[in-house]
Image (cartoon, rainbow, N blue to C red):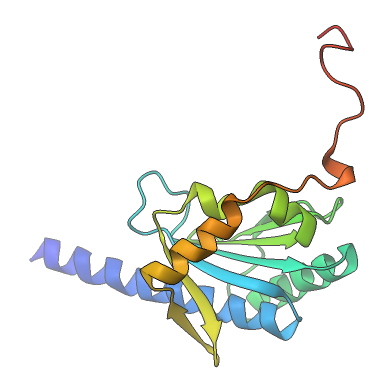
Length: 168
């Protein structure tokens, strides 16, 4: 009986996490975020959260606006303030709500880090008509193949000099 109750509570928690991930994706879309992707990490071993929600902004100002908008919406919905990082650089802002972790990237940073590849065994969802739609295997593979193409290194991520030149 206790196992059934625990399983029921876990399903309820997972449903709440998925609903919150969808809510965050909608808020990101309202702020004109691009390339919104929800990753279901519930079946992935060692995952730091149940869901990742990723999006891109085309400028540092947009990254800041998306991040602030999602944070404000989270507080208004009763989620409180998340643990967060990256506000100063505005290249990759992370908002950690424990079960749902949001990644708001500058487009260049997202192209550089490609964290989708790290969790490629998870299920991918996209936002369509205000709901999450799971990518089928073919679409997901095509998406990952596009990520596999040569990584673009924006100037801001290129080091000046090398470790050998500096004697390190």
